[in-house]
Image 1 (cartoon, rainbow, N blue to C red):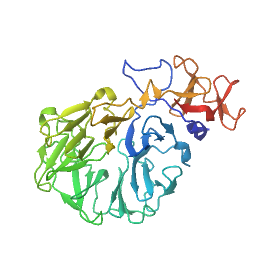
Image 2 (tube, rainbow, N blue to C red):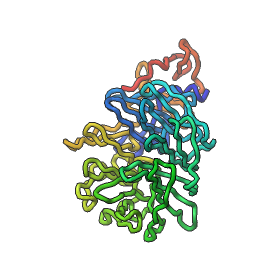
Image 3 (cartoon, rainbow, N blue to C red):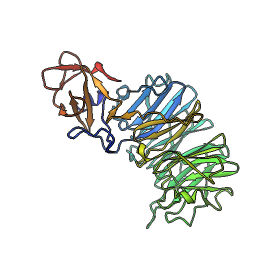
Image 4 (cartoon, rainbow, N blue to C red):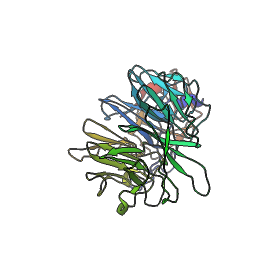
Length: 403
């Protein structure tokens, strides 16, 4: 039964802001958030909650494709292309998915990965380095030299959690976190041979949670004019640091802005883009001054939000309301994917709105004013897969669309 209603292409996200739609007795889905944005022309993917969302028109419309997976509950966490394949990681630590038809079909590749689920707040991340694939995770770090068919643990990195990995011009970087008391200790590792061997960079003693790292598992490193920039975990105004001597000394960037819990940092054509718990910022002077272009109104204060990527003149950022774009030329910010309390108003037949909350299916026939738990009213009806609001009138799952 659970897999059946998870197959339904609908769910409702939690939006508590007073200006937003907030059903009085309907479903919410807790702290769901978009963990990544993948863009190739008009083809886009993002993870949201347990679902993989796809757009074929540059983000104008989205639909859920989680039902294409045998697992159904995959909680997508990162995606990257290498050659003809797209690779996808999830909270299921013992598997990686790959597709050679632009995401139409997926296969599971998992040999050598431990059978561990990972925290949704510190998800798996995947990166391409030369001919290799590198994965960081809450419970392990691993390398694949055969397009993901098999994986080997990275023994040089011994901390209990790795939480960010980036291939830059100067090398491959991975952040890790130990469980030392009283504060977790953070470390940076660097590889010059695509992950075959690693060296540990010095940590930063001046930060109460020592070291440089990415607390919530998004990409952590960028380079600009000889500096290595890293987003940081401490909640004390040290959210972005940089070094120009291979980690021997570190400098707090943007101290006047008191950045907290850095999420992601990128360099695009000499412009630094950075996200933290409160918003998204850009700097044209190596981090000396910053302009905020996306703030907490877009629900940044949520684990995993803030992943940054760029395509065709737009900066895409993952937020609790799904991916949002920032036009570099016009400064225009796109409408969020998640709005009005649901995924762009998920509808099914005759205006029935569906919502999914922790394994229970709800339906509304009056535009979300009232909700009915229809978990037990799922069956064949007149179609192979249908649902009913009252047990009498049935709606085909095929009618469920995103408007």
